[in-house]
Image 1 (cartoon, rainbow, N blue to C red):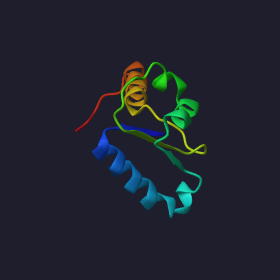
Image 2 (tube, rainbow, N blue to C red; image 1 turned 180 degrees about the vertical axis):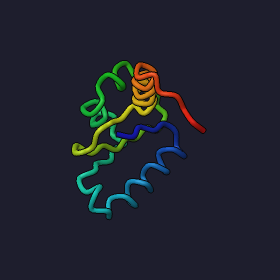
Image 3 (spheres, one colour; image 1 turned 135 degrees about the vertical axis):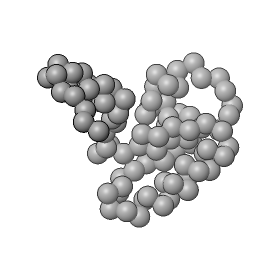
Image 4 (spheres, rainbow, N blue to C red; image 1 turned 120 degrees about the vertical axis):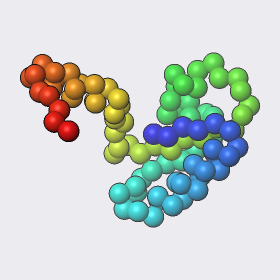
Length: 88
């Protein structure tokens, strides 16, 4: 899922969505600027939202989110437990 705010960012995401939609890997991706639709997709993010700034999101049900920061920390923690050292 990608979520953006502001006119320029919404325009960028719309163009990105159109470009990716033709790629088989991204078939089924959805795009919306509709606050009611976004409440269905991301209720906690939209809860209590009062801003009238443009907002948009894309989502694809077959995709996953990855927290690369957390993943990297886990990998380094594992290496430290195994007493691995870097050799640059």
